[in-house]
Image 1: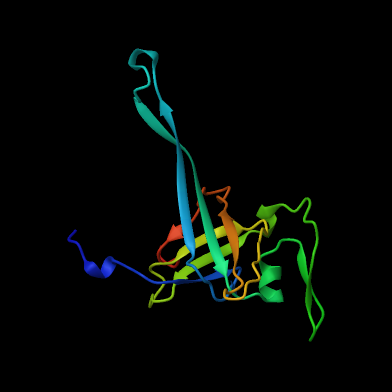
Image 2 (image 1 turned 30 degrees about the horizontal axis):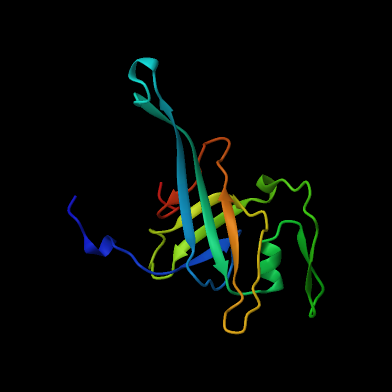
Length: 168
């Protein structure tokens, strides 16, 4: 297959969780896929590998969120609920005992320049524990990073897809 310069992509992405747009980001959305392997060695060859086996793969997405709203906070904080109409607040519990797979839902990272879904990263089961840190500074936006973990489907082992989710 010949090289094609149109396959070289740049730009930012929009992120949705369970159908909710997480809003503006600042600093770039980061996707990290890590694969762990087990290296096989035998006495006769010392520490020289004779084979490797894949023993796990993870996907993490970090979203530096720039919009600080009650709705987005409740979406990204397991155990939080929205209270009120008109004047609203988020009530956040300790979260003790929350099973993150129970609150996991689809996370979609879609490049904003994409005209279709061919560059999407879809994680069917993603969740965040709800860690966050705010900085209140004079000359800086209040950004909080939300880190999402992808979970494998127990029936299929599917962790994530890259490309158009409608492809069969």
